[in-house]
Length: 298
Image 1 (cartoon, rainbow, N blue to C red):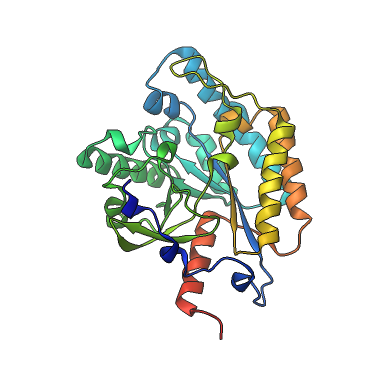
Image 2 (cartoon, helix red, strand yellow):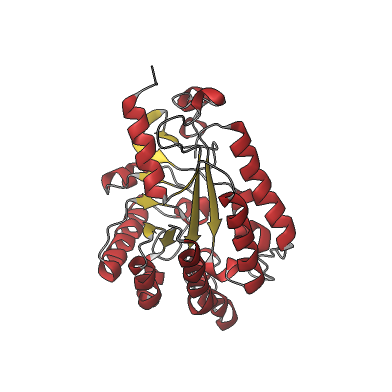
């Protein structure tokens, strides 16, 4: 990414910060909350970590064998929508779990084919990755993805033109604000909406442990993570800035029992607040487009 690809303050001014941007419409919505899950399974280890050892792949399989079911049960308990970003390899390797996610009514987004970070790909390789990912999701669940989250939140200089070419409507790979904004590529506004995330709101940066191929400390206390996540939500809510609070989680990580218990506590905390809108990522992008088309309130 170049500096020109990162939105400037002016680029974000379409939805100004502070009370002036508060959702005061009849819907009463104040903060959008999106629970998102990157169902990487084995693909993260194969594509990003470049390892195929049985022990590493078994960690990915845990997400399919245990994590997905626990997540779907929790979402059903609270009748919450979610977005799952699924690599094509995961959809092909775990079709039953992928179909169960779709059958439960959750949105499915593009997440590469083998969790390949785009900066390491040529333009033709990245094009093939996007095509294979779309094909796998269409074959397994009959859905063409509207949204894209780049593996490891890494983008190349070719990513956005390719996403536009393949009809992707929103991206979830940037970290530039607490609310949606238009993606700018090489200084030019695109038609792609960014629904941003944050490493501080991602389970992998807080919980993931590994000796190899790269050392990851992980193993944070769930109480520490709960404090961080609830604190960030509280701040967004108090600021009243049309925020979108996006949690990024992985079935193989968040799917452990004690972490699922923590996630439930976070959900219950957020649910206490008035004006909270639990939404899929595509819904947040659609809402942003509609508000941009309507223009500022008179």
